[in-house]
Length: 64
Image (cartoon, rainbow, N blue to C red; front, side):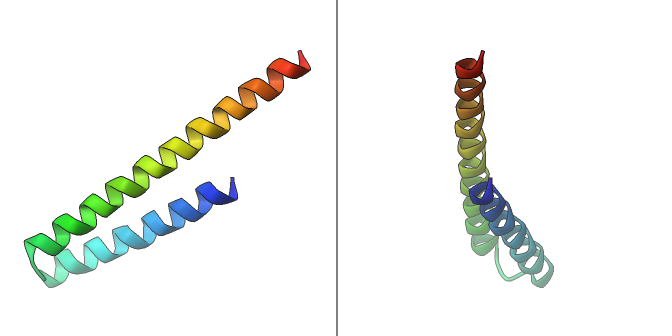
């Protein structure tokens, strides 16, 4: 779970950078790059959640 929290913190920081870039109108390319990086972080978070869910399912199946 600590790994997931780390990813979510990075995603939160990324959203802050996107908002700042959009507010400063620094350029469309930079905002697009930040959005792509954010999507990668979301994907990573979902993969970690899926892994944790699989682990929990196996853990509870063993106890049953």
